[in-house]
Amino acid sequence: MYYLFDHTFPGLLCCVFESFERKEFEITPVLEEEFQPDFFSHTRKIVTVPEKAGRVQQALLQKVGRQTALDFFKIFLSEDREAWRALFSIIQYVFRYSPEIWQNYGHPDVLYLVQTLKKVNRERHRMKAFVRFHKSRDGLYVASIEPDFNVLPLISDFFRKRYADQHWLIYDVKRGYGLLYDQCQVTEVHLMEEEHAANRRRTSVGDTRALEIPLDDRDRDFQRLWKQYYSSTNIESRRNLRLHLRHVPKRYWKYLTEKEYG
Image (cartoon, rainbow, N blue to C red; front, top):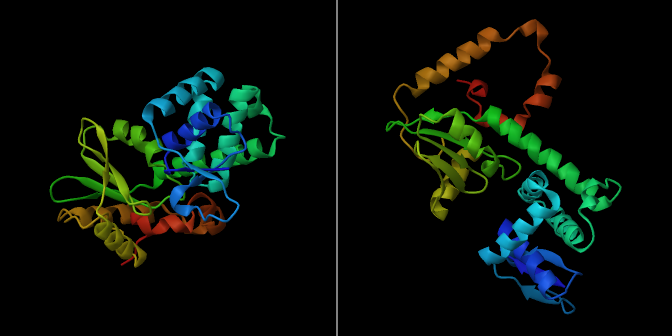
């Protein structure tokens, strides 16, 4: 049977809740908008209920502990549909049999989830280093990113603490939402569909400005100074492009000020 849910982690947890409540265990969770029915498909639409998701989350915390429960959330942020299926299966196993399954790397689902978790953690680490802000005329620092995975929720606390005295916005071009910090709290913000499409068009042609926000007159001067610093610290004779690409993959370059030319 297919459980159709709404693309959220609470939605997946509600799939777990319904599975046990209905005693239906041969389940594949699928996004409702992506499901392609056939004549033999049996489906059930799962409504996301915060109370049900919360009960599953609390039970997970008791079964596997805070760190592993957080790892499950990170895996969900990979947006990998196969990882979602494996995650659902492992959470079911934790509740039905034993939480020790998470230590069994010989299990194909566990191995796949561990590999996915490693990728998400690597992307989270890179985003901490590769975010480049531009200052707007009203003093808001704005940055665009386009990570492989939905890591914005994982870097929010890092930037809130690091830039606690500034107003900033980090916008995920790929997913059409961002995090806005007003020196008090971090808020999730979304663009209208037309604005999101326009921003994707700009970034596709190399314009890395986050949104259509007028920049501070001195922003270009600061960018030029940063490029000069980057060039002056570069030792041409020790250049190793292969190693550089391993640590700074080319897909990030269009959002790095030091990689801009002209």
